[in-house]
Length: 239
Length: 303
Image (cartoon, rainbow over all chains, first blue to last red; front, side, top):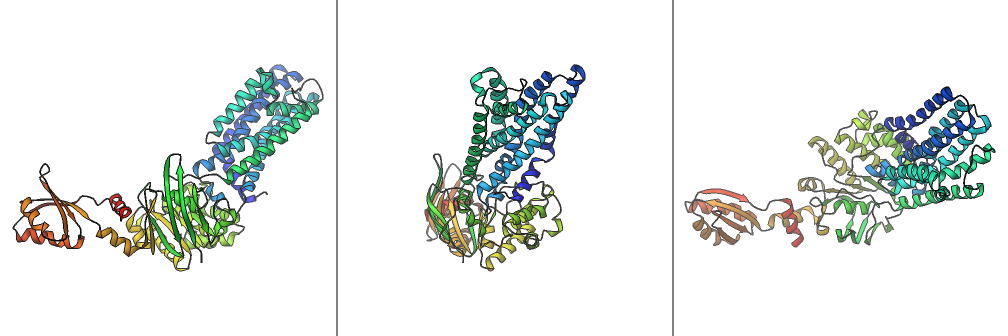
C-alpha cells in the first residue's frame, strides 16, 4: 500500500525551499508569540489554553494541513507531472495512501511539535494543557491531511477552498454558530484533548465517541474517494 | 508483437467534439500521427495512454483495455508533451524514481540514461536542462522498463536540428527493434523523415492512413491554386486552358491577375514558363495561393 518512491518524491516536493519557508513561518510565529505572552503575562493556565486553542489549534493546524494536504498532490496535477506516477503499474489508491501518510507526517511535524513547544513555554504543561493540545493537533493533522489531500485531487483551487474552510468555517463559524461546531475537525480533536486534559480548561461541544467516529469516517472516506478520483483523473491535453 | 487498436473512438468535451469516430490499428515500427494544431492528436494520444476515457469506442493493447488498467503500463512508455517533470530532481534521480515505480533499480535507470546519451548531465538538476535535454530525460524515463509500445506527444517541439536528428535516430532504432512507436507531429517533414506509416488526423477525424509515399502523392496530386500576373493575362489564360493540366482559370479584374487551378502539379509547373516564352508573355508574379498545411490537410479529408 505504501510506496517509498512516491513518498520520497512527495517529501521533496513538499519540503522544497518556498513551501518549507511557509510551513516553517507559522510555527515560528506561534513560538515567538508564546514567548512574548509568557514574558508579559507570566505563566497562566487559562492564557496558555487560550493561545493554544485560538492560535495553534484553530488557525495554525488547519493552515499547515491545507499547505501539506493540497501540496502533496495539487501542484503535480496542476502542472501535469503527475503523469509520471500515473503511467506506472501502481494502484492509484496506493499513490493516494502514500501521499496521505506524507501529508500527515508533515502536518504533524509542523503543527503538533510547535504546539507542544509553545505549550511548555506558556505554562510548562500545567494541567496537561500542552500535552492535551498536542494530542488534539496530532489527531486533527490526520483528518485535515486526508480532507485537503482529497481537495487537492479534485480541485484546481484547492488552496483557496482549503483556506476558506479552515479560516471561515472552522475559526469564524465555529466560534459563532454552535451548529457548525459539531461539523468541525477542530471540535472533534478538542473532544480528544478534553479527555487527555481532564479539567475545565479544554472543552469540546462534541462527545468523545461522536468525535472519534467522525474523525475516522472523514479520514477513511476522504482517502477512499481521492483514490477513486485519481483512478479516473483526466489529464486534458494542451488543445 | 504489440498492436494498439483504436476502435470507433470518439471524445467530446461538452459540446466540442475533439475526436470523431476514429478507427486505426498501430503495429510494430514507427508510426507518425500527423495533423495540424488542434486536430485532436493530443486527445487521441491521451486516450491511447489511458489518461482519458473515450466518450464512445474502445482503446485496447493486444486485446487488453487501456483505460483504468494500471497493469498495462508495464508495456507502455509515455513521453508527454508537457514540460513539467519534478524539476527539483537531478536527471539521474528522476529516471531512477521512474525505474523504482516500475519495480526496477539503478541498473535499469543507468541503461536508459546511456541510451539517450544523457549520462554527462545526469547529476545536474532538471531545472537547469535545455529543452532537448529534458526531452531526452523524459525519453529515458519512458524507456526504463523496456516497453513494447512507446507513445510520444510532439516530441520534436522546440528541439534544435541536432537534437532532432539524435531523437530521430533513437526512435528509428526503437522501431527497428520491433517496438511499436507512435509519435505525433504537425510538421510534415518530421513525419516524412521518420515514419514508416502515417495516420493523418484533421479536425478530429481520421483523414488518411497508409505509407508515406501514398499520402505524399495524394498531397502533391491535389489541385493546386496559383495567382499569376503577367504582361498579357488573357493571352496567357487562353494558351494555358488548352492544356489538360489546367482545370480552370479566372480573370480577376480587380486584382489584375489570373487565378489558375492546376490538376497536374508536375506538368503545370513545366508548362507555365514554356507557354509564356512561346507567346512572348512576361510572367510578373507566380505564387501558390493554398500551400498552407491546413489546406493540404483539408484536401486530404475530402479525398
